[in-house]
Amino acid sequence: MEDRIEGLLPFYMLGALTLDERDHVEAYLQTNPEAQVWVEEMTLVTTVLPRCVDRVDASPQVKKLLMERVREHRGAQQFPASLRGLVDRLRQLFFPKGGTVLLPVMVASILVIAIGSLTWALSLVNRASELDQKIANLQEQLVSQGLVIDRLQEQLLNERRVIAQISAPGVEVFDIAGTDLQPQARGRLFVKPDSQTGSLLLSGLLPLEAGKVYQLWLIQDDLPVAAGVFTVDEQGQATLQLQATQAISSYNALGVSVEPEGGSQQPTGDIVIFSALSKDV
Image 1 (tube, rainbow, N blue to C red):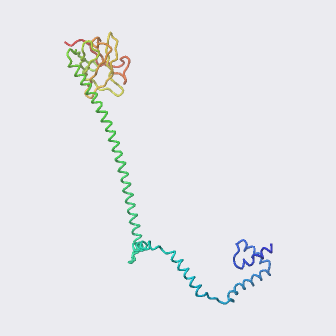
Image 2 (cartoon, rainbow, N blue to C red):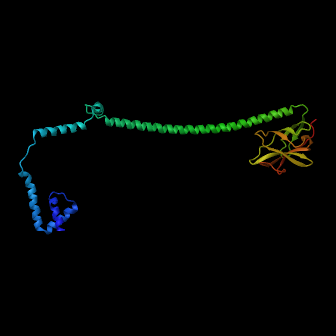
Image 3 (cartoon, rainbow, N blue to C red):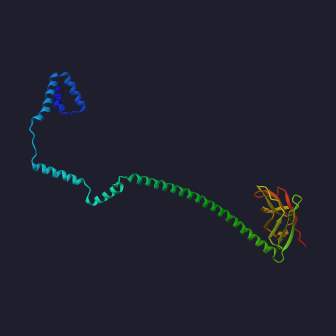
């Protein structure tokens, strides 16, 4: 152990030990006065020895070679000739001779432009969102208007059929009247003899509450046969196309009752129209 530590003494004097090695050497020196004296003497020798050696100047040739190496090293670190003009222009731009530094101004300008661009982009996003919402609303309105147009076209087609039927030669007309529940209700049935189709024009019926509809019945020998459900407009009017399984004129009577939405198998609500099918003379 002592041999190893004594082998470290020269490196201790030169300051070339690790912290752990230096701690071991110093602990050893505290317990070994002779080694401590030797270290002090050797330290003094290493301090005085450089001063005892005569100064030796380098020859002119060595100095010349050394300076050439220094100049070559500096030249290698300089900008290429192709970039010097660009570097000079950048220096003049950011650091003019007047002393005003333009770089902070340019950075501030860039930040202002960036913030302005961001604000403009956000406004465009908001505007695009508003336009998308308007487009969605317009599309919804178009769909709604399309449904209205389809309904009007269907109504127009139905009315044309009615006009064709009531104006056909040989058509029979039956007057329809309301009951005591709706005495203001009235109408007319237009049908050809022995025809299973006909047109029924009604007016004066009261609008019904939600979930209720009017249901039409063709009655033969006191047996009602369902002939369709319908509603009325704001004026209490309705135009219906009848389709029966036999000649409409063969039925004894026609009636209308108030039923749940979707209709019933047999009349369950108030009878608001009831008329015998006798030829109008």
